Length: 135
Ligand code: SF4
Image (cartoon, rainbow, N blue to C red):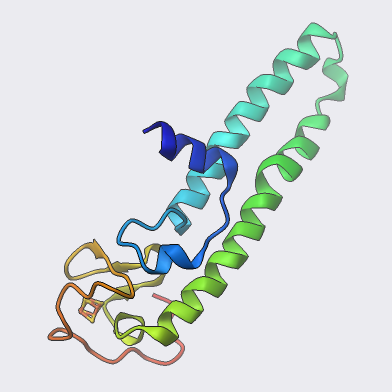
């Protein structure tokens, strides 16, 4: 549990390890949770800080903090996640299957994470994916 919270807070960058694991650390869901968690913490901390320093009129500092502390790192992480998933798709059978869910590295039929080492259906349910499909 603590590991999971640390991962969300740190915005760990996607690594090739995630492609070989059935418990990838970085997915679209983890990125969204990371943004929400960091934004909530920043809002609370900055509100308390502005209140205690009696600088309420500088509320716009919060926007900068959210951009640099949560939104920008998330965008960077998402960009790198997309690059990793693109190469995952090229390297694996699941990557070219219509049942593969890109955003979470998941097989929609088995509701399990797939990896370079693990294909839940062992190829039996594979169906070709449309070349430009974003599902
Ligand atoms: S149906 Fe089989 S090949 Fe397709 S994503 Fe699921 S496990 Fe992979």
